[in-house]
Structures are given as structure tokens and as C-alpha cells.
Image 1: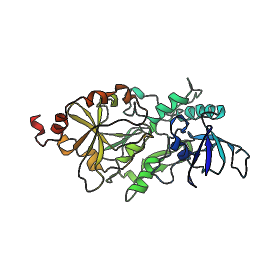
Image 2 (image 1 turned 180 degrees about the vertical axis):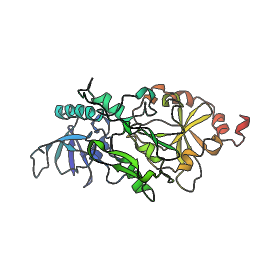
Image 3 (image 1 turned 180 degrees about the horizontal axis):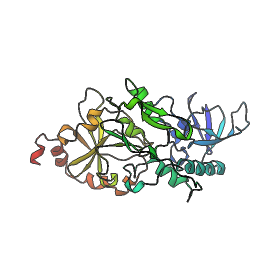
Image 4 (image 1 turned 30 degrees about the vertical axis):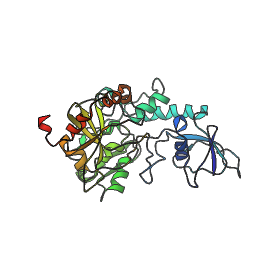
Length: 324
């Protein structure tokens, strides 16, 4: 069926959402997403960041939809006309959504490990207001450990539910979730039970803000000072395809490989993520091109690494690393 988004007409399969239809085109017409995640069933419809205006419902019923709709969970219809960045109403609404998300979110970007690759930072920069109108006291929570490798900063959480969906859909059992209601809602473990499953580290990767942090990487370095390297290993639990964030010869953290929408292409296990910080355990493929918009791209590190001799990567993969 045919759908028009910001004056661009495309053909998509039946059942495609407006969000995924826009992603087929790419570029600026793709609505922002803070809670939607392609590989997580049931995600979307919570942050309202992707609201768009449907000025024509379909060819059969050309009436406009009376309110803005969430593009991540609204399917396209034949002849639908959608306005995203061409609608002043949508752009003004997103300013309010950013302001709403920042009501309780602390502006601690200078010390947050997510700085430089934070979806909320990008969203606020593109659509935010210059100042808040909120005069009340913000919610505050103590920083807690929810497992051996993960630390939770609930003050930064925007309740996107991604981490709970990872636990629901990727692991055998969920040990944490949303407690309480309304402005008291928070992510926590129940009955003091820690998150201890083989794929729990993926909750860190799917978190769009700095609420869930890697305890091994906390405060150790800034992402724009590190060189992301594609690498892989033989792993019986997952694909073993990761990104090694290195500075010189040292591995500072290990993450999954994300696409241009900051979504993981494949989930990785905790053994790959937390237990292999020795480069001898990895086959380094070479520098990774960061597909999503990020301050990391400002370094253009790949131009320098492309000029490095091939012998360097063979040494990175050499079993006699101690002699290098």
C-alpha cells in the first residue's frame, strides 16, 4: 500500500507502522523514538516522542485523525498522508514532550556515562526548549545495585520499559519490573532479588538514557575518547559479535552492535560483555563506523585507523599479546 510521509510517497507492506515506513526512507523524516525497539515485542506507545499528524486517514476515508498519533504503533492505510517535520503542531508538541521527560531527569550529563551516546540528549538538542517551567522538587532515588554488573540510577529513568521487556523476552525469568503507580513509579527488583541471568547486560544497551550503567565502565572514560572496534569470538551462548571500546591496547567496555537507530542488531551474553576484557580472547576485525548520530563521529577516528598497518590487527589477534 502507498503512504505519503512529509510529501514523500513510498510503498510498504500491509501492517507496517508509520515509524517503520519512515525508516524505509530514512533521514530527517524518521520520528524520534525513546521507548520503541524493533526487536522487543510490545514496545512503543509510552514516551510519545514519535507523535505525528495524520492529515488524511486513507483513500477510503480521507478525513484527518483528530489528534496526533504515535507513529510506532499506528499502522499505515492505503493513501494515508502523514506529516512529521513538516507539521508545526508536531514540532511544538515535541518541545513539550522533551520538557515533560526532563521534569525529573537530572542534567548531570558531565558525569553521566551515557553522555555522548544518549538518545535523550539528541532528542532534547533537536526539539527541546531553552528552559523548564517546572518549579517543584524533582524525584530523587538512591543509586542501587540490581546485580553483580549493573547499577541503577532511577533518577535518570524515563520509564521506557525497554529493560523490563528484555528481561521478559530474552531471559528465563524476570527479576525486576515497574513498582508502584503514577509519579511514584520506579524500576526495581522485587523482594531484594538481584538480576542474575546470562543476558541481563543487554538492559544496559537498550536503555536510552544513563539509568542502567555498566559497573565495570563507570567513570573510567568518555566514549568519544575510545575507539570502537568490531570483534568476535566463538561463544556457545550468543553470536559473539561485539564492539570493543578500546583506548590504546586496553579494552574499557564491551557492547553489542547497534544500527543507525541505536538498536542492537544481536543480543550478546554476559560472558562476552563482562568476562572478556583481554584482547587475546577476541578476533579484532577493525574499526567500527558509528551509524547513528553521535559525538563519537566528531573524532573521525576511522580515518586514522584506516592508515594503520595490517600488522597491528594481526598483533591484536596474536596469542602472544604480552610480547606486543
